[in-house]
Image (cartoon, rainbow, N blue to C red; front, side, top):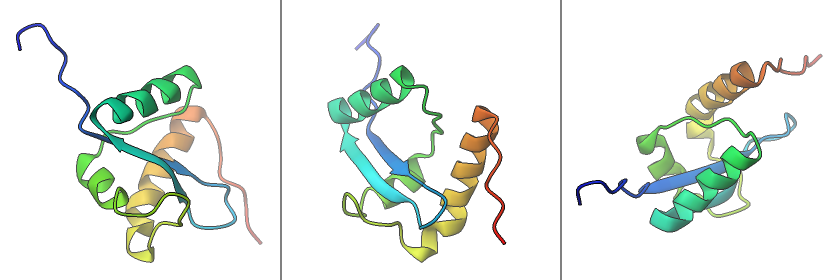
Length: 93
């Protein structure tokens, strides 16, 4: 395997609109994970590597909101993405 880049074992994409809980919009192993990551790069979507969190999120059905038990962990990822993008969360009243 010398000289080969190891396959990305898992990738999960989330969509968050600020109104509801984040939703799982894509997930996959190996080649599908690489495609998800390539698309994120192509569209300037911030990413964070966290394989343990990705493994738990991969159990959520596509299009479903993340479970409440993952809110804090995912909020940290979203905060990281906002920081990288130079965005500021909307203020709620």
